[in-house]
Image 1: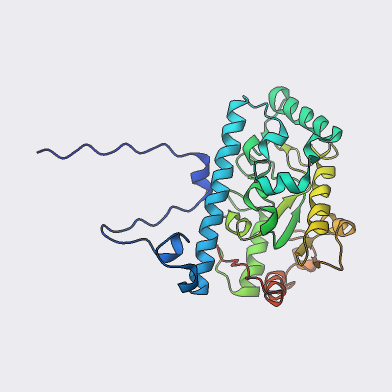
Image 2: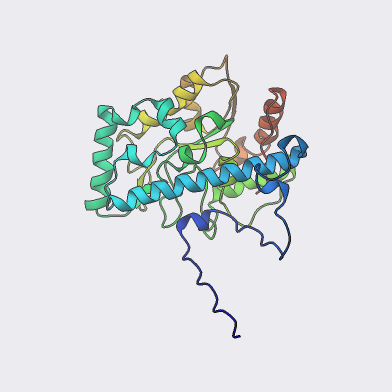
Length: 307
């Protein structure tokens, strides 16, 4: 009997390029306990490292699901999806309580839609990644917050997480300096890519203050309403959560201190990691180890910063 023809491989979606491929199991092998909390082993029988990995895997699956949902909504709209439709993580929808239906947000939505459909230049990131920071890091899982400015404005760079770029895209200098500090601080190996999604699903909210930009025009979508929205995000987590660590790099991020209740949260400040200022206080700040020390004192699991 001739062998059956091979099963055709499904085409990759953009979500596949933001995640690591899963290791293939040998025939007859069983999945490791860390692959899922629904395995035959009870959570109490897992080691702390296995529990951490299982939790990260479940969070990655949730982020991928949200990514696919946002992508399907963006495609169905023909590029004209309302902003509130693209925020699909329910914990944030509930926490922000109609923020994207306020007059300023509706005007912002009209501006971004016009830019995408009729503007002279492409707008980044693509619609389904505009709220990737919120869709990948649920409100109730936030442990630390890294605040950036506006998205990278080169083709293929912006992915909705501050400082992060998709795998296969050259690492910007600021991200390279972040990895250098991580290596000195915690001994982390410098990764071959700049995709920080695994930080996001562990509870690191990587939020830019402006969430869209025109190609090759930095700050081109500043002062259009995004700052009011992201200020609302910061104020909401400051008011409704406690014990978070805010990593504020540079003057722009540090200006958000006014939105944070310092009696409830921890603020770490340093220079920006850009090539122009990293030597003025970012290198040697040790914010990554300090964040983990704070979290552990609060009885929370540390962030695994190694990618």
